[in-house]
Image (cartoon, rainbow, N blue to C red; front, side):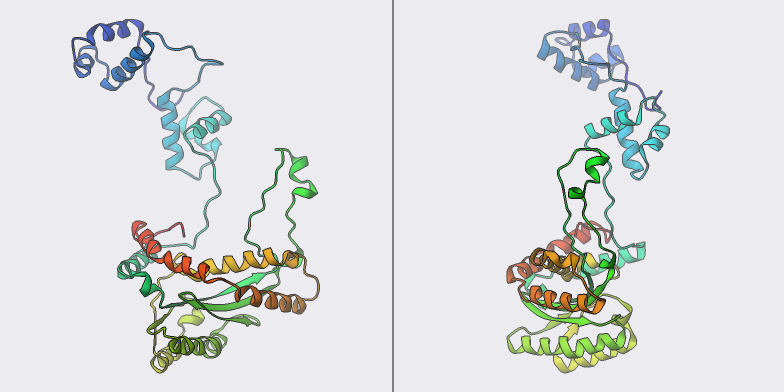
Amino acid sequence: MCLAPQRKELTDFQKGQIVALDPIYSQNEIGRQLGISQQTISAFLIRYHERHSINNLPHPGAPRKTTPATDRYLVRSAESETRQPLAQLRVLTNCEISERTIHRHLLEAGIRKWKAVERPLLSKKHAAQRLQWAREHKSWTREDWERVAWSDECAVRKDSDPRQTYVFRRQNNREKYALKNIRPKVRNGGILQMVWACFVGTKLGPIAFIDGSVNTTVYIDILTEKLIPFIDAIHVDGTTNVIFQQDNASCHVSKTTRAFLQTAATQHAFMTMEWPVNSPDMNLIENLWAHLKRELHKRYPDTLTLQGPPHTIRTALCQRLNEVWWEIGEDVLDRLVDSMPRRVEALIRAKGWYTKY
């Protein structure tokens, strides 16, 4: 038996009493006289007036093994411990029904197993910092966000197509593993090309291709050769009071980098934004990386099967990424900037925890 409380069905005698008392007393009074809840009486009378009969409708097929109370108990248990497997849910609720039946009842309530969303690990301290940042920027308008220079690094592999592949097939292993239904993953897909880029408002900034890993020295070289000339150029173009955004990677927040940015900000008239930890959902360029990878594989489908030594593959990736980057339209950037007030609102509603972005 299930641990959930069982609701008793009304007897024919009780149904007759309710029908007899209904014209005389209120439903609350009938409930007090008969010791039956007002909700049960109300539900019965609705059915009675619709059918003009006290009898229940016949149920097709085998009788249901669970009561509505049992089903609600299953739903509450599944929602309270979302990670538990069906077998554990069956034991926890002590229901003498199969896992398949539990699965079917949960589907009726709109609940099924989904792949858990992956997000950076947040602590209470991180959430508090993110919430404080969101509150500080709550009043920012779109015009304010248009002055932010969004930046970051990204690793691009030749098999880093973010698009999901869906196929039509039946639910059996023969079709599941058929050649036409497989998305191949090549062995040397791990060869990667590191890139850095930035943008302000609807203006694309430069893209830099990095050999090896990014340390403080490499990062400062990128800022010197790419970021500073870009900021000077958009100043001439009329965009002033630029706010440079970067995340909290170690090479970004090292003492040497901070000192460089402090001097450069004074000389080239820009500010640096204090960034909350573990907050890629607030960094617009993360969405631009996904767009860049999608367009790369859409325009060059053979990227997945590029052949040759690592240097040859990286050279091809650089050429293709450079072409795709400079063809990103203003409409893409415009939509991203337009989303920032909504992102901040979502972060405040989440109290600094995870958002959909």
